[in-house]
Length: 117
Ligand code: FES
Image (tube, rainbow, N blue to C red; front, side, top):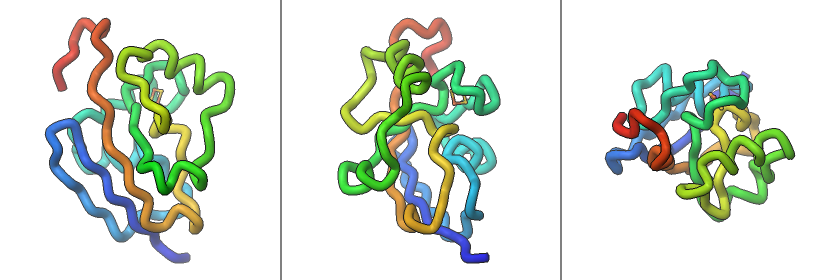
């Protein structure tokens, strides 16, 4: 099996480069496993918390695809920090066509009581 590459910029602007990501790993799992600041994944990948919110680099958004209706509804809960390429990291799973993917972790939504990471 071929391992994949991801560049993830965290909320502190630290750039994390991964070059051995397994096919099927979600961006939330990758971030949590590696302590990427701003990726909390509080709901464990259930599309129910938005603490895995990332901005996909514009060039990659066509390949990751847009959020489905359920994911979009969750993103709407963090509308104040939502961007045109927003995705929930738990809903983006690595696959060969995403090799080299670049994302930036979104800041916490303003309504979150614990808005610091
Ligand atoms: S981990 Fe909760 S929405 Fe992604």
